[in-house]
Length: 326
View 1 (cartoon, one colour):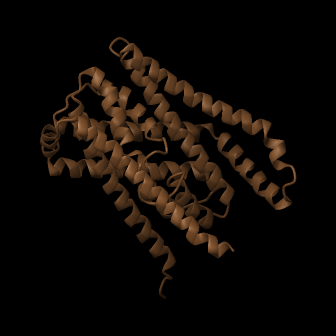
View 2: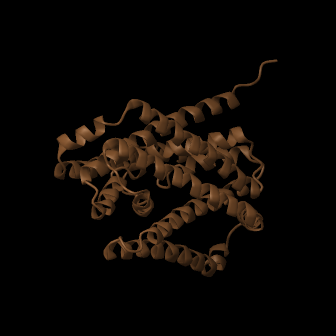
View 3: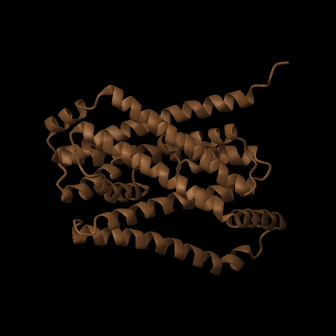
């Protein structure tokens, strides 16, 4: 019975990823329909290949820091993962976010490797949750920083939307915590002893992380630095396309667009992120076709980076599976 369900689940997964890529194509097609294609093409051609390669290298180096951050957090929970295994987990998750059918993105692949390699699987799960929380907190911090940097020049409507986005994010987190507390006992009722033991290990791992606030704070600093690096690299690509905006405008618009891309509408947020950037930067006088050009080039960086990450994860996994010759 289980084997019979596997092809059906695999088929559903690929239908999901196909639908998301189609949705991304539709969103980008709508944007292209309303923008001057010849101006967009000219903007794309302005980007030198050398700058694109340098931006790609910077993107990959930022993710190397991301590997170190993820390993630090999961090991604080007791995962005991070395850097190579952490790199395989992280790189596999980065590839899966773009190219594999998964409702919750690359976390499935990232956890699959980590849970198998760690002597404390619950710590990997707890650490990954904490790492995601740090990433979301970094995004929210950049949104607040953007609002503070542009108190007078941000249109009131956009300012209210940014505040609402932060409030919604905080509200969802608060509701999740409250529901978890209220449903804790009903969910445990009738569960097996084995399940309760696993849940107890997860709670212990979460407490281990929470008892190390310096690790969480440093992880948040690293997460903020990584996201700021991505923001700056996008702004540099925009300059190559002919879009000159103060960096403070990007601090306002870029993290909001990144949060919008978290909606599970398209694969990896492709299309949604560009549409959000166009809508958020247009009130600052940015030409929509230049914003879209910068977004498309950045998507090229992200896609190529995902391919490199997938190859890296494959090679690391193959090396681990190959027995050493005496």
